[in-house]
Length: 176
Image (cartoon, rainbow, N blue to C red):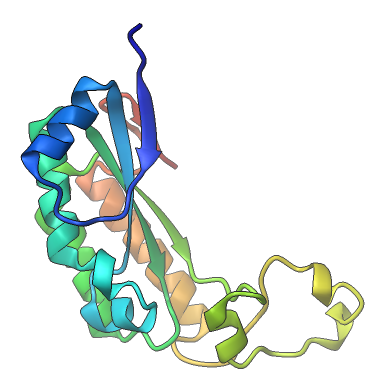
């Protein structure tokens, strides 16, 4: 039976043999959580062990060599992210655009039950008090500000559009 499938994978600089087996099994698309191109931000996210940018870059290249399309997820405005950190993320997109088929970019949201959501200070909004336990994300105080975070997401989406990695079909994938 021929089956085409896709999945999510943690980056780990896969061997060519591993990706050859994935491709032969029908894997057509893999999504990796880049989240940031900055080692500083990845360390703060506690993702550096498996999310090092050099591992993701190696996996992207290997996937391209084995005919597996790739998508990345990324976050703009993670708490403590500097302008320099953000620029490293944009630079990663630029450097590897030839082996990326799409990027899902979103601005940081403070999820109340996540480790970072518990760590950062959230802003209490009296008007939301009754529904606050039901909220998906909370407003937070800190840097970058919410205004800066949104500006980074907009800038990132502009860069992705220029690179052909968002907002249009690219090799059978659609990202908006």
